[in-house]
Length: 359
Ligand SMILES: NC(=O)c1ccc[n+]([C@@H]2O[C@H](COP(=O)([O-])OP(=O)(O)OC[C@H]3O[C@@H](n4cnc5c(N)ncnc54)[C@H](OP(=O)(O)O)[C@@H]3O)[C@@H](O)[C@H]2O)c1
Image (cartoon, helix red, strand yellow):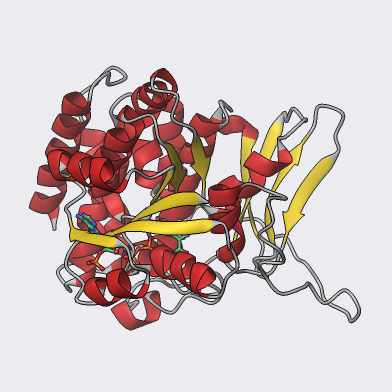
């Protein structure tokens, strides 16, 4: 029996994970702990799964460490949204516990410091993001010279003028039902930007060897290309159950069939299209942050989080989000690659303050 602690249990990823356990898709997993920030649904979930539950901010390291000590998990699913996920990942890694990591901000902001902390404490980091989960599995026994990350393209893949986009329009994702922050990031392609940076760090791949392609069907989750030119893809219906549960139990460990079957007995098409850097400047900015590294990855993430909040509270327009992130990146002093959580926090705070002043 694997003991699982779910951080961010009331969100989209947390709910998909709990649904899978509820439906006996991972019979060897026992939920031992659940956290959220304030959702009133948490006590009911604790009761249903007979698990300890607590409201804990991702930033409250001491409370998290006490909860980890009390629940004694074998693996932690970090499904907290935004930058609050990084201190939680660092706390879990410091305990030497494997982490099924949905919170991409942990990798993008924590960078090499977070990854080396996890390695130092023997804490495995298993990606949950469907693109990185695909690459993680495809790389078993293979070496890639190029990664190809797929993107649905979001709700505006066919809209030419993005001025005047409303909050409701931006929250209407064509394929995935997700939390509000990641849904807006999917509409601006900042989410794809975060994923390019995440992939370059997780798989030690230079950003110029990572491509993004618009794939409307969200069936191919990502691809790897070998030196010889073979391209391997991982395909499944668009359902996060597969990457979440395989991150927790591993492949071939008795979880059974986790998602619907692709309809190969009838006809369906897969398409791949070029993304447009003019309409989606946040993806270009992410490549710049990935290339230059240092503080820019942190500034990109923190400024985007601030700007998305400002958009969701009607203080700025949709196209302002990219303008704010660009200005914050331009104004950021040069920082070397951070080597502590304090240095990361200092850069993030500066970027948030600068972004806030622009909103
Ligand atoms: N949703 C997806 O399909 C998907 C796919 C790939 C990757 N991801 C990544 O997974 C993470 C979670 O995404 P999501 O869509 O599940 O987000 P979400 O629906 O907004 O859920 C976020 C969860 O984190 C908790 N939380 C929020 N702020 C917190 C804080 N400051 N401290 C502690 N807990 C906090 C929330 O608790 P309350 O409910 O109490 O606020 C909720 O349980 C993000 O990093 C996202 O990029 C998501």
